[in-house]
Length: 280
Image (cartoon, rainbow, N blue to C red; front, side, top):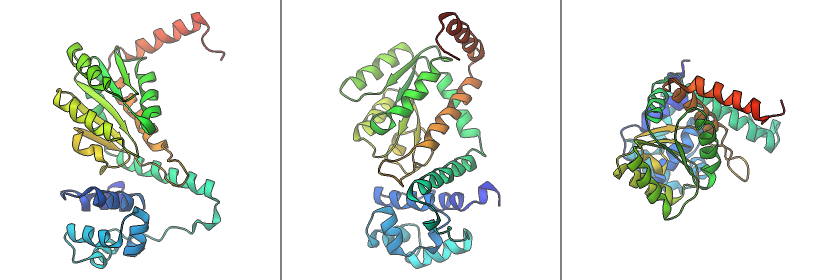
């Protein structure tokens, strides 16, 4: 089976072109995350998985053009056949969390089979002087990590890692300095402030590139280019291996569009050695 024929890819194609409510986007996101299991779930089980009511699942199926959830499930069994997932009882809860993250990384690998969106994003980010990087609350670590490494190859990276009324001031200052793009990391739970900040950035003329946990995340409507990478939800706090890795892939794509990236890295290594920064 090719990556474009995977259950997750077929589900994504099923949802495209439909205007979904936030609740329906949550259902769609849950279905993509559990693409192999969905054709075998009842409407009650899917509702529990997505954290919504059973009638919401029925309305979701109707919104997709089906008579009800049974018709949607029959369709899924026809177009996205898959074997039920192996019983989780063979692993403890920590192992299950790791296995879930491995599956998220597999889905990311499938998405990257078409490198065009990431390459486009890399070019957008490389061309922005300065480059703004936004990440609040759960996404702050992802934004900080990207900005740390990006600053080694990009001439002017400005991290927006704390919320507040000065966010818009800093966007205005960056636009005056010549910024053309903003990279946002957006992970659940999504702060309302992030959605408002991205809307402001677009109004200011910036191209917004977003790494989010789902193509149906609340930030999708205020992003020019959204790159999804699922988070793990098996532990008390979400895990974000796939978004972190996607951020590193974006760095690589950005470096490909920065002619002086390699020379900047070599210059840093020379200075680091002279200063004795590292022990290895």
